[in-house]
Length: 387
Image (cartoon, rainbow, N blue to C red):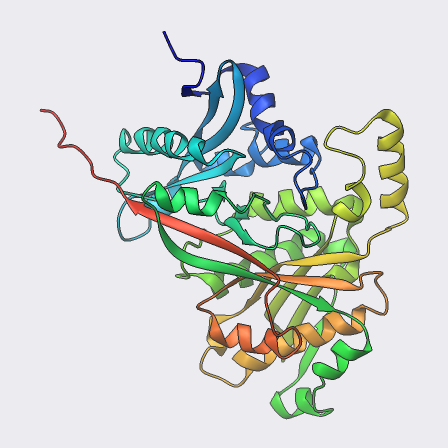
């Protein structure tokens, strides 16, 4: 018989437990300083096998931790077929790691490890929900900063507990907050003839009557720019189609920045309004009145902040002056559009701490990252297969 204080971990079974898994963070973290619950609906889009595009090429197992019949933590273990095609150790992931009790972390990690080892996975990385194109990292710094769409929140006790469970730091992901007012524009001041000196560089937004074509341009540039980068999983067509479909109610032409060099697409950025601006006071499961308020705010585009979720420059410019200049021009264009869009703060993240070139460009405007998320990894010792 289990002790009342004993923690047990078991796979999620059935619709009710899946619903509990999805909404558990807002139950665990309710009242903690800095935590704002996202909508359960948004979390379901990330995690439900029927909705998340990850399951087109991956599979996962979800676990809940229990004590005395009360859920106290969760974790996912997942395998992405696109990653298994890459060179190196067979790598699987953990994600959706949430608990308010550090003692719960080790048994959760052990459950994820056991599931992956049973499938001959040699290395585990995370947290990702569910791969690098979803929510990334465990929050180390920034718990009291403004909540931002697509950014996971965890209490500061979680990182040390993961390390105590035998995981090493792989890389940190940095987020910068950039104001769009006159002072930021002055910090990003560019020579007036810069574009002309480097070639015929033009900028344009999303063509609302050619969304599918522009989505494919975005996917092509992004995948080319970040191929072979640490932890990267290429965006599929369904990933991008699903992203733009989810953004359709709030999508504006100015949120898409395409830089073309001599008429050829060269660099891309996609800016997403921060849904917490309009939903943060409604809780994870709004009342009917709350849904009406949310609909009105979205129709009015009542956003104050936004996040750059995709940014990339084609690899062909890697050894040219344009490799450094194109991101600067993208940021300059975002500043200009700040006069059209209502956003006064734009988050640039996640930036790999090892990407020094991009960091230097951003830190001319915003010298210090205001959030830090950490990725961890661990090699798994596999038992010899039985004959």
